[in-house]
Length: 431
Image 1 (spheres, rainbow, N blue to C red):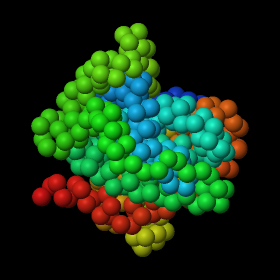
Image 2: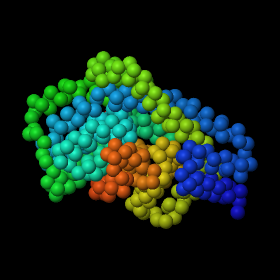
Image 3: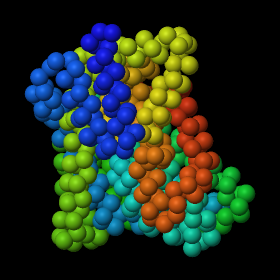
Image 4: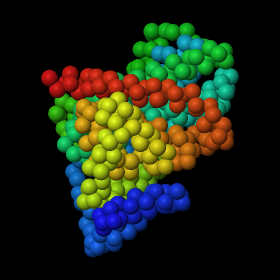
């Protein structure tokens, strides 16, 4: 056995062993990297050098700004207005509150960019509302956590920025555009599943549709939705970079939350900023340490080995695409989203490109797979948040979520095998 082969075994073996032992992901990545460097005979100073290199990126500055924007808007009384807007659009349907939940997550996800923030902010409002109207608490929680994944696809999403950085040379603006239709496909899939369950259980309808009420709620939510336009239109139109747009969005969010909607006072602002710093510290630690891990993967030629292993199973593009999705789904069960994006992208993106999947489309596939992983035990962050809000056992929530897992898989397969779902808007605006 060569030193290189042994180093690969040590790197990956120790990593998955530490994950199985429930060691925090940052420590697992760091320790396995240190062991790999020792086996290779490299100086340990390589670790901090690679960590600093991972943080030395102008585009990465967009991440803290987008996180701060999401926290400010999420704490500023935006959620209630978006729920009313969604209710005016789809509340009249059978199982109307479930539909409202899905549509509201599409709107709010475009503001927060985070499934966890969506579940924590909207879940505490809409789950009790659904229960009061006669919906089962487990069903209410299940549709809340699954619809929150829309926020990962609908821009602006800091996870898209992470992917653009990991993939190298991928346009953040194109990724933002690419997320709209897949987010809508996921929403429609969840709404179909909700409707079937609502009819079977005879869940109630909401108020009758009123175009006057729709316009009233659009006007009420205008300032919140404008934040998305500032970011997406500004980036796609070339007015400013993703980092500049994120900084402008933070200032705008602060103004709207404090002076327009008045959902935050200055004490609340400091609390929101404290929450943003806490979230950001976790994300940046993972980014830096994952860069060192990725350095080991690259020097050991693991991406090439992975590509050879996958293509050796089959040369059929459909089979390879299914294998990529399967690998990502399994990783999502044991790892959090940021490290999957940073570690799996350099390994699996070349394989995806070899079967004709464009980097932008692969980014959407990757993010949706990671989103499903946030809902699956044993490391389902959003699953745990939903369970805590509803005060229900994890196993009950998982059982209620099973039909929605199927809806999400259907959306994932459509996005995987129909490239235009992801590529239509980027191609349209590229012309």
